[in-house]
Amino acid sequence: MTSTPVPQSKINATLADPGKGEHLWVILAMYKVGDDTIRRMNSGEDPGPTLLDHENLLTTEGAGCFKCEQPYSKFIAHRKCTGSMGDPS
Ligand SMILES: [Zn+2]
Image 1 (cartoon, rainbow, N blue to C red):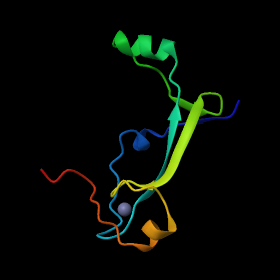
Image 2: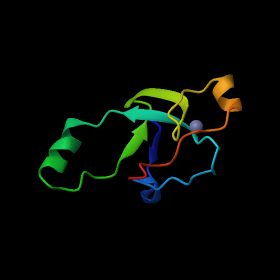
Image 3: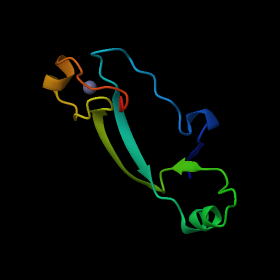
C-alpha cells in the first residue's frame, strides 16, 4: 500500500489567487473515508491521521478552473478567467 500523509498545512488551506484574469487550474480527488473514522468523528474523537492511498481513491475530476468553474478546454484556457476566488458579499 502506498500512502501519503496529508500535511497539516494543506488541510483547509487558503488558496492563492494567481491574479485577475488568470485561471486557477485544479484537479479534484475524492477519497473514501472509512466508517471507523466517521464513528470517531461523531463521538468527538480525533479521527487520527488521514492517509491518501490508492486503495481509497474513488475518482478524480478535472482539470477545471477553481475561479470560473469551467472545465478545461483549449478555448477556456486561451480566454481570460472571468471568475473570482470567493463570494464578494
Ligand atoms: Zn477561470
